[in-house]
Image (cartoon, rainbow, N blue to C red):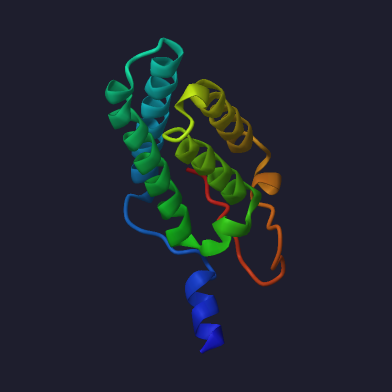
Length: 141
């Protein structure tokens, strides 16, 4: 039973689905667009109701993008890139409660995203624990 759960969470090789790269590119573009509009809206003091949709779209597109990683393998949760995604999500979820600090929260999330997505692949996919027990998804896109 334990081996079955482990092989379902951490398949070797990681799972795939048709048009994965296209779906991830579309989600990434939507995420960058909505996050950019959200940050710009806060910088230029757009009213909060006008920004609610952009906040929701940013969170949803980012979560869906991460779900595609988790579909491949839950190893994404214990890789440096997964920890960075969870940190960005945490910052975004703070915004409704701390809207006065939205610009630094969003700027921090943007910086974390830009830096972590451009780290060398070996570092970005570094597993923080269970190193010899999981196979990471090192595909591009």
